[in-house]
Image (cartoon, rainbow, N blue to C red; front, side):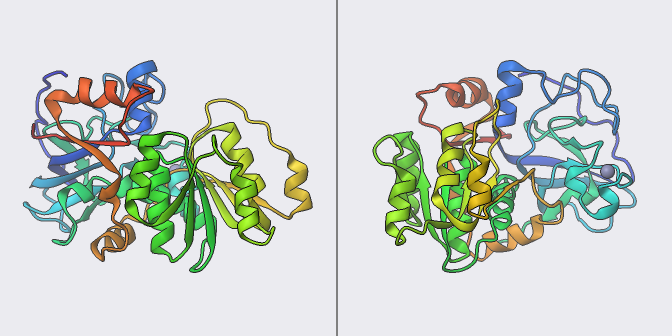
Length: 340
Ligand SMILES: [Zn+2]
């Protein structure tokens, strides 16, 4: 932890915010343990940002000052930040696929400010106001909740569908809550007993232990030999991807939402023989935050259930990063109170 100078001035279209809560993401862990990886060692082409970088891209905050041209927000508003920054000019941005911008940057990874600080200066248009029915804590979970929702949506999950989610880290656990909110019957495959327990406590999914049963065989038996309609792979594990492909029915969909750090072997003949679609997802559509906030506000998507610890920022190294990096650790999602 270091002391930095506060922002000296607020630009016309900028907003100064004071973060309430900020989540620690797997990306942050990789930067801490093995970085710099995505944090820029050379000036970022979009905004010139360069390390050292204030981390934190999953946060809620209070507006403390607005720029001269800002009209959509007022001082005192409670907000959540959609952290992706894009050029609005490339092939993808011109087609509305801003999350795939060729010059993508991200608040808290490749930007002058981040959510793991007492203050952050952000562009006006990344902020969504939180209604009273969404807590400060829930506001910090909109970002990972959007990642999970995009994975499930890409699986074309409908009410009454059966869905397998492999991996119950924060994204897999959120995917289980979201798929359930859509009216799907949800199964979660997870090896870690702490994470199994957390997902079981949601009461929305049947938890399967792949070290004890053959998950694909179990799901096929359950559905007359057919299999599930969709599988969302959230672990980044080769065997989990193989299980997902073996568990879906013909013409089913497998979505790769978790990040793999090395190549995985699959049998592409299974895709052909069974007309299976294997899709990938990256982040989320940048316009999705108001919809996710509405779902949380309605009580349909209780994202706060994935939080396993709430800590003051003073304890972020030991109770945050080190605790999450411990392979035997009990944490799923750690939220940091940026106000100490
Ligand atoms: Zn672009």
